[in-house]
Structures are given as structure tokens and as C-alpha cells.
Length: 387
Ligand SMILES: Cc1cc2nc3c(=O)[nH]c(=O)nc-3n(C[C@H](O)[C@H](O)[C@H](O)COP(=O)(O)OP(=O)(O)OC[C@H]3O[C@@H](n4cnc5c(N)ncnc54)[C@H](O)[C@@H]3O)c2cc1C
Image (cartoon, rainbow, N blue to C red; front, side, top):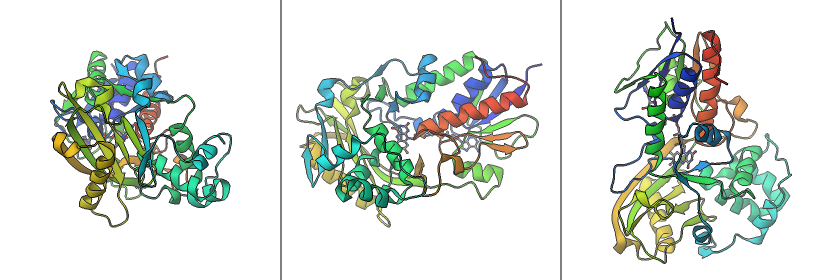
């Protein structure tokens, strides 16, 4: 008889765990509360295919290699030189071609090791000067979704600064058709391996007869497991998606070193995301303490005025949102990913997701933890991860 494993949650973590468990020979059932799979990796319906959360994978991470080996992210686009040449920085309220020299200088110090127990703000100011610290915080806004990365662990922020400025850049990969296509491919692949996928199936109590991987947000896991300790720091940001008539004057991206925001015109890299002659841009800015969604959207509109001239007349579609605690784990001074809620919970229960004890950034944490949880659930069932 095949050993059964239950997975709760059909986002990237749940689908990754389902594939890995099925590859190891288990009979897998995955329950997803929503009628559509994908969680935060869902996209809106055409004509503007805007990702709800995620927009890029980073090809220098192990999760990308795992998915690419299974054909789950192809075809994809990488930014071409012409597109990169249309990248800008916002610094001192203006668009510039290059970041300030103090930041460039700090970015050359790639061998510097940052301490876990100090805050990035004071450590980086001491090491590189105040301007380099502030602009590095702006640079990683796109990864932390936090208005004050200076308060976070120096080791945590510095790792992200180095990845965002990797000499192997550009590491970002845009899957053609958006993240929903990845989700659909993962679901097809899982079904092909025999996984039973139940959508519209909210689980209210943990099953006791099979090993179970809880691949939900940490908030949902806290309720399911009845464990108040399942909490971790995360970001809060305002988001504005714009469908626009294309203009040759548009930038490809703006890294907002002043306010930690970004503009990314991913409709320029992937033309399937918008109707012919149109493009799709996502703008983000971390919300400050006490700032409302309306305040964040006003700042985003100002950023759009700078980056996307005439956007108000060209806009044919728009969507506003706040991502509150949905953009992955942030480690405070004195903590690292190892201190986040453990994957193994005892009694045949494992956690997977982007706020648990696994390395990587953003959704990479979901993938890493899903593979760790799957290996443990397989071992507990007397099975092994497929070679
Ligand atoms: C604005 C924004 C931008 C981002 N950009 C990037 C990016 O560029 N690159 C990147 O790598 N990452 C990015 N991320 C992070 C990425 O989106 C997430 O890390 C990832 O999608 C999380 O996947 P998950 O499977 O762990 O969780 P989720 O996607 O939250 O999936 C959990 C699933 O569990 C289901 N569920 C919950 N409770 C139950 C229950 N009781 N029973 C059954 N099902 C249940 C939910 O419906 C959901 O589908 C971004 C996130 C945001 C918000």
C-alpha cells in the first residue's frame, strides 16, 4: 500500500512539497481553501495579467534550479541589455542613471561579513557612511517591503544588498505569462505524478491519520496548529499596478533609493501580459509607521509622475493593494532564519512557507522549507527523496 501524505495549502510551498513527496513515492493529497491554486503567486485575468504578489524569480537561487530542472518555469525572459539601459535610480528626488558613489563603493566590499546581532543602520553607517547606508536601505526595499530596513539584522540586510547588486546580475527571471503559469505547470506536473488536488477545500483540523505538511501563511498555520508562538516579522507596502498605452519614453525599472520603492515595467520584458500596444507596470513603496494605504498610493502616484510621463492619460487599467505581512520573513538584530518557527512541529506535522526556518529570500524560503518538510515527511513514512 502507498504511504499517504497530506498537504494543506496550494501556493508555491504546497505545490513544491506535493511534487517532492510524490517523486519520493508517496500518495499525496493537497487541500487548497481557495477555488484557484497559487496563493500569493496568483495573477489577475487577461487583458492585464498582473501578479498579485510575486513578479520575479532569482536565477542565482537553488529554488530556481529545482523548478527549471522540472521544466516548471520555461519559457522565461531575462532583461535584455536594451531594457537594462532603461533602468534608473531615484535619488534626491530625481531619476539618475547610476547610484551615488558612496553606495557603489560599499557594493565593491563584497567580502565584508555583517554581524547578525547588530542593526543594519548603525553597522552600515559605521562601515560605509550614512549616505551609503540610507541608499542601500532604498535598494533593498524591493526585497524587504519594509520602510526601515536599518532596524533589521545587519547580516540579513547585507545578504540582500549583495544579491540585489550581484556581479552576475541580472539574476531576475520573468516567467512568460506570469506566475499563474508557473502555478498551472506545477499543478499539472503534480497531477501527472498522481497527486490528488482538492480546491475549495479548507482544512479546519489537522488530519491525524497521515503525516501532514502545513504550507499556509504563518497566520493560518497559527490557527490550524493552535500555536500562538507562530509569529514572525514581515513587511507592509502599498502596491499600484497600472495598465498603460506604451510610450518610448518609459523606463524599464526605477530603484527608488529615496523611499525604498520601485517601478517595474514587466510588460516590457513579457509582451504577453498586456494587449498589443500596451504595457503593465507594478509600483511599490513600503508604508511608514502609521501611514494609510491612501498615503502610500499618493507617494506611488508621485513616483509614477517621475518614471512614467503622461501615465494619467495613458492608463487603461489600475489596481491598488496593501501587502501587510505577506512579503516574507524579516530578521531583527540577534536573529537569523534559524530562529524562525521550526519546520518540524512533532507528531508528524511539518511547516512550509516563507516565514519559517529556511534560508533564501522571499518565495525561496517557501521552496526551501517545502523541500525540507517533504524530505522529513518521506523519511517518517519510510520513503526517501527521489535522486
Ligand atoms: C507584493 C509582493 C511581492 C512579492 N514579490 C516577490 C518576488 O518578486 N519574488 C519572490 O520570490 N517572492 C515575492 N513575494 C513573496 C511570494 O509571493 C511568497 O513568498 C510566496 O508566494 C508564498 O508562497 P506560499 O506557498 O508559502 O504561501 P501562500 O502563497 O500564501 O499559499 C498558502 C496557501 O494556503 C491556502 N490556505 C490557507 N489556509 C488554508 C486552510 N486552512 N486549508 C486549505 N488551504 C489553506 C491559501 O489559500 C493559500 O493558497 C512577493 C510577495 C508580495 C506580497
